[in-house]
Amino acid sequence: MRSVSLIVDSASSSGLQLALVYPNASCAGKEMYSAPTSVVGSHDVSLDPGFAVLHGGHLSILQGSDAVVSLYVWGYLAPNGDVPATTPVG
Image (cartoon, rainbow, N blue to C red; front, side, top):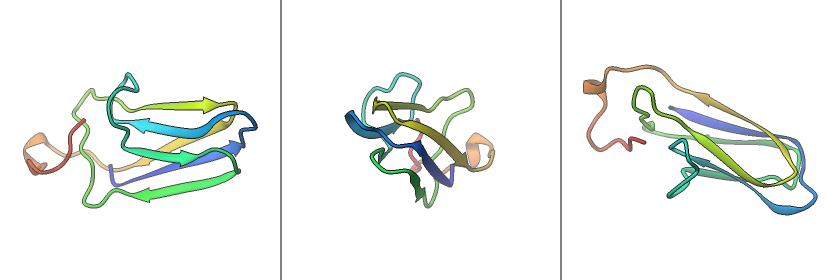
């Protein structure tokens, strides 16, 4: 992944006004990205030099409010051997 964009389509009015993105399917451990959900808008982040997700891997999003959000991820496919050992892998 090279960048992530979380779009708040409808702002939250209650609860924990935050959306958290995790590098796994279970919303467990340390989040890789978070954004407020109290205001409609786009929250973009560049992931230089990139963030590797193994083939068959997942991302998950947890939000503690009534907001409506969309998550977009941009990146490319690469053979496992082309990913440096220092690159985070979820």
